[in-house]
Length: 111
Image (cartoon, rainbow, N blue to C red; front, side, top):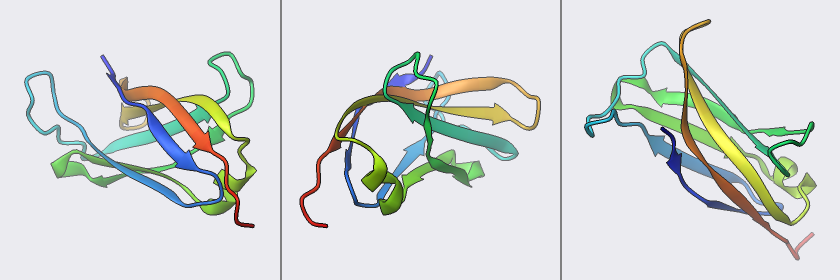
């Protein structure tokens, strides 16, 4: 079951977040060999999405990173979105959603 976590992204700014993945009893999960994907959408049923840059940044320590660059966040309209992050045990392996929630994109002033 995924952890629910809301995030805020400032329009026109770089965004970065690190996630530590634990197993069901609280031990750090070894993500060596895993793949990660993450997207945000205006609504769950939206056909268009924005991909986070995502990576396993330290497999043995269970660290996953997601990021959006300032060009990408500048193109997002201010408002609420939904997102999730999934890991997959190698190509064709089991997929698991590790985090999901709402993204609030706050409008920028400086151009």
